[in-house]
Structures are given as structure tokens and as C-alpha cells.
Length: 119
Image (cartoon, rainbow, N blue to C red; front, side, top):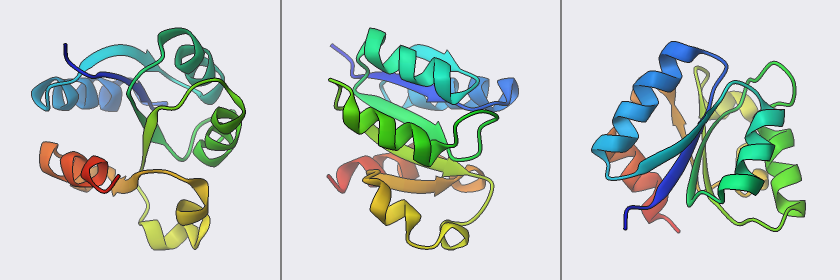
């Protein structure tokens, strides 16, 4: 059985691109969310193995979602994504507990595999 994934990004075109990438990487995408609130609901309901989570969301940012996931009875691997560089967020990425961080420009099957393999 393929590992499952949820994509969280406020841009529909990017979500569609990420779904194709995850499919190519062997994931079954079970959810696609435009904001943090729907992401939290999807994580609880769908119990994905992986969450590809944008840092900049319209309601709760990715770091806020990460903090709330810690309080849920769920333990997905979370990879943060952003148009900005990891250094722009200082130590927040490391403190968040995310498995990795990938800029949207560098997101690929290989970069995703490297991020998840660090676990």
C-alpha cells in the first residue's frame, strides 16, 4: 500500500503541481487544503503519512499548524515549503519539528525523498 499524503497550499495551481509530484514519488494524495484550518481537519480525519505544508497560509501559518498538530492524536511526517528561503525564517524551521524544508522552486521527487529520508 502506498504511503498517503496531504498537500496544504493557498494556491490551487501549486497544489495541483504538488499532487503530480507526490504521485510520481509513490504517494497516494488523499487531501488537498487551501488553508491551515482545513489542513488540521484533514490531518485528523485522513491520518496521512506525509503533509506537504506551506509556511505562508491565509489563516494559520505553517508554524501554527505544526504547533497544533503536536496536540492532536496524529503523527504525520511534515515537510515545510515556501517561496522564501529557509534562512528567512531563522531558527523557526528547526524548532518546528518538521522533517525538512524545501523551497517551492526546488521541490522535486529527489528533494522530497531527501527531506523524508532524514528521519
